[in-house]
Image 1: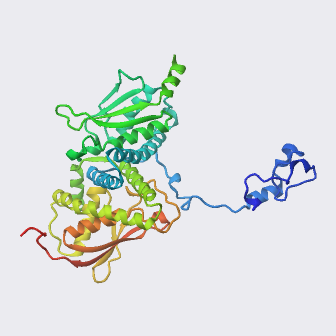
Image 2: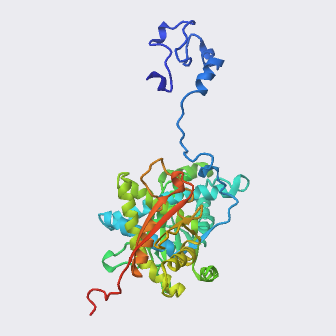
Image 3: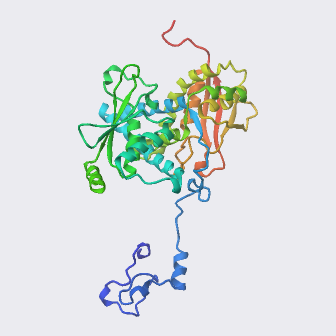
Amino acid sequence: MSNDNIILPSAASLSTLSIADNPKSGFGYNPSLGPLSNTITPESSNILLNRKTLSLTPTSGNSIYDKNVNNKKINEINLSSLSFLFCEAVNWTHRNSKGIQDLETRLNGLGYQVGQRFLELIKLREGVKSSKREIKIIDILRFIHGTFWKSIFGKTANELEKSQDASNEYMIIDNVPLVSKFISIPKDYGNLNCSAFMAGIIEGALDSSSFHANVTAHSAPIDGVPLRTVFLIKFDEQLVIRESLRFN
Amino acid sequence: MSKKGDDIWKNVDKINSELFTLTYGSIVAQLCRDFNHNYHEVNNQLDQMGYNIGIRLIEEFLSRTGAQRCQSFKETVEVITKLGFRVFLNIQPAVENWSSDGRSCSIVLPEPNPLNEFVEIPPTKDLWYCQILCGILRGALQMIQLDVDVNFVKDTLKGDDKTEIRLKLNKILKDEVPAGED
């Protein structure tokens, strides 16, 4: 099935080629002809246009890529619906997991896919004119803590802090993480924090903007705010080096 | 009844529906991977998850709406679409195709709805992407003594002209004292 190959060799051995050799399919680079062998002639364009193609978008014309994501009024939905759904997600994940650590990793994975997609959506909506690529760690963190958080969860996160001990560690703190609002953790599950899902969202968004990081969620209750959660963001060491090379 | 739905809607805590959409998508994708793309299993699992949601969701529904006992299945379906879907998903589906005996009908979801927005599925005939809704309806109705078969017959994601759920009332269960409570 040589016709299916992307690069069609014009002859079995290149050294035997001469100017008179035209590939059977009408395509292929003939070194003795040079760039000329790639010119599109009426015959070759005919072959190109009549090739069988496979449509990758079955609903094409009315596919999701044709819809405008920009001018749409943001729809709202009942918070309980998400809570019910999330509860079932945790339930399912829990049944498949081998332990608390594993459960958190899986929840993180679920959030990761959400984060990647949400970032794209927000950036598309910002539009070409007003949006810019964040290239500094502190800027991308401000974006996540502010705009990004507000679009997803309806409010900005509470605090943004930098670790004193490690140069690549930052913390975003949310007093009432949306998804844990209705979750109470049994005593024997110790330090499980279902906000691992939200940590995954942050990680997905950071990774997609080329700030590779590990994000974990830790409960840090203080007086009056029992659900307070710290999202610990640990950037790749390489990023700190990149930053110091670029801006110092 | 629509107005009542609007009034209740004003008082619920709301979030961005896109978070819900993407979360659901992420869950379905994960299930597909967990079941190695055996879509029958995925449908079953979604249905089971929905059932678990339904049996608990009905409580919140009753307390929020204060809905009274319905006189007929027709009324029940009206309450589901005008209050249930409205309060939880902020959509109001249409009811069509009543059978002559009044025991089965179709619920047609508006497009796009919070479950299938941004979604495109590979050309497979097996996966019912929104199957979780069937489980929810089945579970919730069972808790109010209605044994109902719920399943999808059409889905726009598969290229159909609309997304249609078929409901069929099997029987009305008797009020029974829960096991273990004399």
